[in-house]
Image (tube, rainbow, N blue to C red):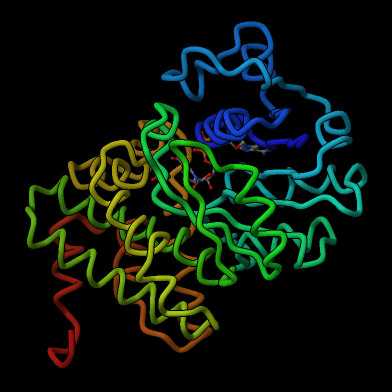
Length: 331
Ligand SMILES: NC(=O)C1=CN([C@@H]2O[C@H](COP(=O)(O)OP(=O)(O)OC[C@H]3O[C@@H](n4cnc5c(N)ncnc54)[C@H](O)[C@@H]3O)[C@@H](O)[C@H]2O)C=CC1
Ligand SMILES: O=C(CO)COP(=O)(O)O
């Protein structure tokens, strides 16, 4: 198939390699000419994904929006979530009516509280049955090294989910299909808030018990919010939920974990942003989760405590103290 990937960041570049390994013709688009030039001239993207030494020959790049999507049967979006709306708008005029659009993004738009499935379908005027989300425990550096990894492809259309899953299946990358788009979107976005908090507790010097407490409470919060939003609880217990939570909260490859770790070590939000090797989606998503909880009448103690870290400078010890502040009934 001809597949366009919008956003040659760490994950877009890596997913482009997966799609190329699966036998597709891949066209990467990026707003940054440096990434486009290095992909075309050196077959690498050292700025965003330095560990890939040579991209497959069936990956090329362009800065031209029309030529990126003109022949694409699938358009994959891998742009930092807070910029997805403005980045996608100019593509609308060039999209075919039969194109499937896939989101790899794991964030909630801060200004509107919308999930990426909502942003993408709204901006492109896309019917829901031509949208799919891909999310799972997929740390880009490990997938780039072709280490065995699995993911979930969710769409309201089984045919669309299967088309996308078939297009990205390789010997090392295994997609599973689901119909729970809302659950998948919330798993990917909400686990980043928990990863920030776990990273912060580690940076502050706390050990396994504290990390496990935060992870378990984060999972409960994600699941409660998801169910209130109409998602299936089993999605949160699966690969894209607990699976991605484990990978992200345990790895210094995660930008969210590392951002939290640096905050726990005493960096300010600005210093941690400067030190971050790519987008840490949990940072802008935290406030969106607090607001989502308020609108769905679901308590979000973890996201609320994390928002006090990001907005009011609460430190690692303060974060844990705040988490201890709830009632002793239940877990
Ligand atoms: N890196 C990873 O391991 C994984 C990342 N993701 C998700 O994929 C999405 C992208 O992540 P990465 O590629 O890792 O981030 P990155 O920080 O490496 O790249 C961000 C991308 O967004 C683009 N971008 C930013 N602002 C833009 C704008 N105004 N207009 C157009 N393009 C703009 C950049 O050019 C770049 O291509 C995020 O939502 C992330 O949560 C999902 C799974 C794994
Ligand atoms: O989503 C990811 C792994 O599944 C990547 O996590 P980070 O965005 O925190 O690096």
